[in-house]
Length: 408
Ligand SMILES: Cc1cc2nc3c(=O)[nH]c(=O)nc-3n(C[C@H](O)[C@H](O)[C@H](O)COP(=O)(O)OP(=O)(O)OC[C@H]3O[C@@H](n4cnc5c(N)ncnc54)[C@H](O)[C@@H]3O)c2cc1C
Image (cartoon, rainbow, N blue to C red; front, side, top):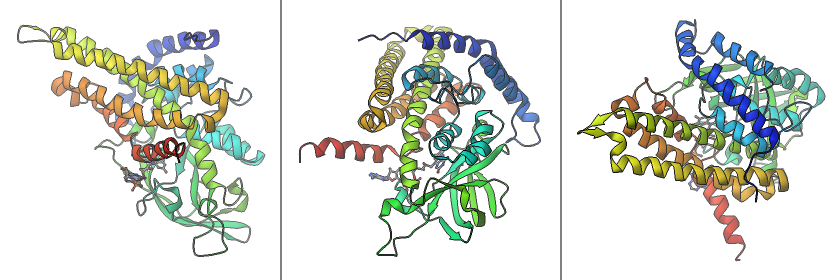
């Protein structure tokens, strides 16, 4: 078994590490300063646009998309270590490379399922980094971890569909550059005994932001943060929103299957970025431990601190191997074949990284919970990934059922 990265990955890793040192990390403070001066905190600071232009110029662009014509043509195994590096600066780096969620998942959906016209209108500007997008599935009124509960209605009316419903935690929607929503709703209901199966009642449809009746109502908070860098997480109301029937993605009733297809690559991207976040936490822990003295000796000489750092390193090495194995399986046997591993990394990574970040916060004392270090915000971001893209328990349920099935 060869654990080395191939030549292309190594070349891109080196390029990206240099880009992070020369452009992204120095921009972190500037981005905060520029945002404080913007008319709205949801607007994009100029430095983010500058980073995008520089990344594109250097060929560090759309690395997430395996298709060589539309994207960089990398396998999951090649992209995974690059996503990890961007995780060291999750507010800026993924956006700079046009590799940020939820755009990546949305671009994959459009790439796989959209018509040529839909691709021209929405995929091309997304790939060019000219607009942003949102994915609207979760609803405050129903347990949305079970997608069959979704209540938003998408009703055919002549040449149009009419959409009514309320969504929340719709990432990216507060950013005015977010021009297009992929909305999941019901084109059929359970009322009709002759109607389609429960997993064929949902559909996905494209809704441009400026369509009458679409209201981005408010920004939901995440542990008190508004998450400006990711365009927030909005409550969005659809009130008699009318779009042409040609905006449907795929066929009526195909929404559930598209949602499943969207999540495989997205999960591995999140997990690799989380590992990058953990690496940053370890680095900050070590720097803090050697620079602070308490009770007569540097914190680095306290056994408990050494244990935290050692445990964090062991955990990160284990997680990385599991995530890379998953990436390799996705490339070789497909997302279906990698089902157990995709569930495993989605369960294991966020909770382990939350623990590492929590220890890093502890080691930094009050500074750890403050705005002067990235740790508190990273902790909040990592913690939400135990919910976003499906709660841990749903993945545990599905993984366990597969394991048990082999014995019945
Ligand atoms: C920061 C953030 C960003 C998000 N971005 C988006 C987005 O862009 N678009 C979007 O549509 N949604 C988004 N979400 C929503 C997210 O996908 C949902 O919160 C998630 O799917 C859970 O749905 P729910 O909140 O309705 O919880 P519920 O479905 O009500 O579940 C609540 C809890 O019940 C338990 N539970 C549920 N099912 C089971 C089970 N089978 N076994 C055991 N326990 C179970 C779990 O503990 C779960 O956490 C985001 C959420 C967050 C926090």
